[in-house]
Picture 1 (cartoon, protein in one colour):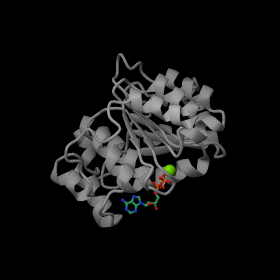
Picture 2: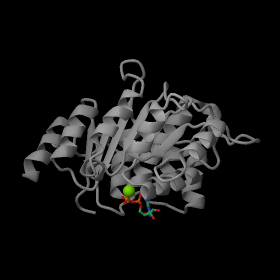
Picture 3: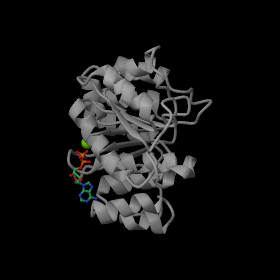
Length: 259
Ligand code: ADP
Ligand code: MG
């Protein structure tokens, strides 16, 4: 019965194929077409030495940059991380162009200025995403922090409160904890991007409640317009349900089954 489940998502989505006529497939064209700040594109092409996007990247980055919600299905190892990090970081910079350049002195943010949260099922995956995000933002003023279980909570809280945060990457339990902790100054009143990576695993591992509780600590979408992106290797029924209650109508479904 995976068939009807996928059909259910596909029908609700505006277009399974890219709605765009001429989607960007090379990273350098993101800068040439003024879609992503050259500081980020240069880091991708010159430091990370990447040239061609993978299928899931081209089918999510183009759409996500246009502002629609996205659900992407693609196997492990197909480059999903950059698929959500590039639009997420670009949006942070687009909203606050002073963040496009790395400040001469130490990068700093306010702890209550989180613009984007990425939810990942495990500490290891969250840390890997954070490493990628640190690389991508190295020549910008964007501050990235992690919130994962296992590490000392107080140390993490102190670091995030001292250095501030624009992009917070973490596991469901720790993210929920931090956003609801009355002693913490870490808040997201301007958050406009929410990413759920490995959505199938998040649900398998029973994090539905934590995810819903995290959402309660984010500004209401009627006040701050929110873009949500979900990435998953598989789209079982539980993911379909999460898509239906989380993504805005007209969301894009990038189903990459050929890679
Ligand atoms: P996934 O999340 O889909 O499992 P990752 O985002 O972890 O995949 O990426 C897998 C590997 O592919 C990483 O080592 C990453 O650096 C590399 N990679 C990502 N995008 C590209 C690309 N466009 N070209 C070549 N390698 C890439
Ligand atoms: Mg991944």
